[in-house]
Image (cartoon, rainbow, N blue to C red; front, side, top):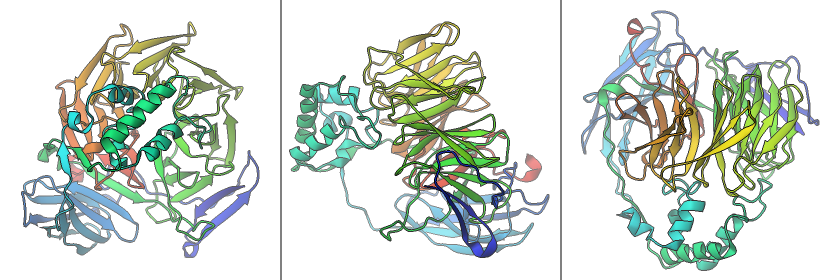
Length: 567
C-alpha cells in the first residue's frame, strides 16, 4: 500500500490518498505551496523594504558571551532563525512579520525567553539572559590511548569498524558497560542478514577469530564492571565577525499520525536535495519511509509540505537522494531498490538492485544515468541506466571484501569516484575504458567517506577515522591530507561550495567547519541545536547550504544576515 499526503489549508486537515501498486500516478494533487528561497537573510522573501529587524543584547551570569547562538522562533509558521552574537549583541535582519519567541542557546546555560510581535518593516529589541544550569553528571575525560588501549583488538576495530562506529559517531565506548555476552551478541549481529537484506560487515573479510578478538577487547575495556569514560575534546575557537553574518533557518517537519500501537510516530531525516527546476527542497524521511517535498513559496505550516510514501513492505529506509532531469531518485538501505518519483504526475517506480543490500549514496552522470553505492555486504557500485531502466553493478576492488562504499560523485568527464570507508581506499571508473582503479589513502586506517568535487575537478573527501580532510588529484592520483586542528573531530560530510570552500560536519564538536583551500584556515559554524549532526550537505543556485539535522530541514546562509542594502 502506498500513501501520499498533502497538507491543505482547509481547517489544517491531512488529505490522504491510498493506492496499492508499485507504479502509480496521482493527478490533481492539492499541492502545498512554499515560500521563496530568495536572498533574504531569514529565508523568506518579504516585500522590498518590509522585512523587520530583531536585535538585542545577551548577558550571562557565568562565562563570557562570545558567539552565542540567538534563536527567534516564529510560533505560527514553526520556523526558527538562528544568528550569533558579536560583542554581546545580535541583530537578525530581513525578518518576516510575525510572533517570535527569542532566546539564547549555550551549552550548560539556560535562557530567558522574550515574546515579540514584529510588524512589517519594524525594528524591535529583545534582550535575553543566560544562567547556569545545575551541573551535569561528571564523566572522566581521557585521551585516545587511555580509552582505546593499543593492541590487536584496537587494530581490528579501527580497520573494520571505525568507518561506521567512529570515536564519537555511534561510539562503541558509549554502548558500555556491557557484559561479555552482550558484546558478543552485538559483534555477531554485524555479520548476520538484517533489515538491510545483507550483513552490515562481510563475513568474507573478518574471520571468526578476529570477531572474538573484538569481543574480548570491548569486554576488557567497556565490560560490565567498567567505569564510563569519554574523550577529552579541544576548545573550538569561534570567529565572531564571520558568524555575525551567518544565519541558520530551521523548518519544522509536518506532523505524523500515531502508529498502529497508538504510540506517537516519529520522523527521521538524512539526505536533502534542493531542486534545480522548481522552488522545492526534497528530503527523505527514514522514519516514515517517505519522500518529502517543501515548496519554497509559502511559509504556512504544515501546508508547505507534500509527502509520498515508498510503496514497499515495511520501512524501505530511503537514504540517499538526488534530482536528475526533473525526476527525484532515492536509494533504499532496507528496500534494496532505487526509487524514482515524477513530481509532475506523482508516479513512483522502484528498481530492485541485483545485490539488494544497503543502497546508500546517489549521483547522476551527464546522460542522466544514476550511480549508487551499496555500503554493506558485498559493497558494490551500481548504475541505473537512464534509457533502459536496467541496473548494472560492479565490484570495483575485488581484493577488498568489506569496502563499505560511502559516498560517490561523477566529474565533468563522467568519471565516477567513490570512497571505501573500511577498505580505506578511493576507487574510480573511467567510462571510456570501462576500467576501475584503486587509490589507497596515505594514512592506512583513514575511514574515507563523502567525496566531493571542486571547480577544478579535484576529488575531496573526509577521513573519518584519521580526523582529516584529503584531496585526490585525478590526473596524477596523488592524495594530500590535511589534519584537523581539533582532536577526534571525526570529519563526516565533505562538500565543496561554489567558492571552492570545503564544508565539513564535525559531530563530536556539534559544528560545521568551512575549510578555505587558499589559506588552509578553518572557520566553525556551530549547529543551531545542541546535539545536532548532519550526514549530507547540498547547495542551491544561490549558495545556500541545505541539510537535515535534529529532525528538521535546515538551511545556512554563511553571509545571509546582513541588511538588504548590503547584498
